[in-house]
Image 1 (cartoon, one colour):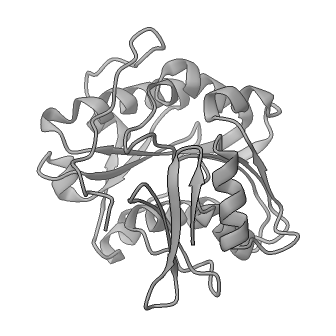
Image 2 (tube, helix red, strand yellow; image 1 turned 180 degrees about the vertical axis):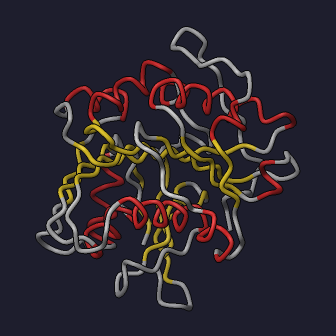
Amino acid sequence: MERKVGSGTATVEAEADGTFVLRVDGSLQSQIDLADPTNLAFEYVRRIGDVLDAVAPRKQPVSVVHVGGAGLTLARYVAATRPRSRQIVLEPDEDLTEFVREALPVPKRAGIKVRPTSGRAGLPGIYADSADVVIVDAFVREAVPANLVTSEFVAECVRVLRPGGVLVHNLIDGSAGLAFIRRVAATVRAGLGEGVVLAERKVLRGKGFGNVVLVASPQPVPDLTTSGRRAQPPYEAMPLSELAGKAEPLTDTEQFVSPVAPAGTFGR
């Protein structure tokens, strides 16, 4: 299936393993298993699944806010593993959401509500102290929007989170010195407290481009070392403070641009 949407040309194609792949202008957005929503194909999505499983027992309903929607992979995962959960998805591309719902239907009574707005514009409309988890996974042309990595945005996430809630932020980097994710790590740490960074070793060493998942909370974050060792490929759980080092938090005045992934990085 193919359709013009607000962010480009969206396509959904069936894979040999029975899953479906969503792309926008050729860039890989989501991989969904309609028969088994707990099957998380993307490596970084499995890491976020590990975080969810560590902070909230299965079958226990949770309240989750997703900044970025695409194929609604993680929202489907939460609905399948924790029925009766309440989820709000902030996805500005209303045409994309309509296309996904048509091509990859969401089960009825899944508890997933999609609001046609961006994360920065939509988060102020969510009640304070209403979410157990905020997941930020939003990109524009394979780069992280500058207004989703600042102290002001993190403060809004903190407002929405319940005491002890968890912020999960998916980023990309691989540039020399990792200046971008170090600054974001410092920003998240200043706003919420300690946490962990989940990424492949080569990425943390600046020897390869890839996803970096930051996890932070006012309460101690569960140990994800074992989950990281068992994952394929394995990922490391580095303390947030170690990655941040002496980096300074970002603010809205800087418009610090994230590195753009090399062409084809997310086209597989």
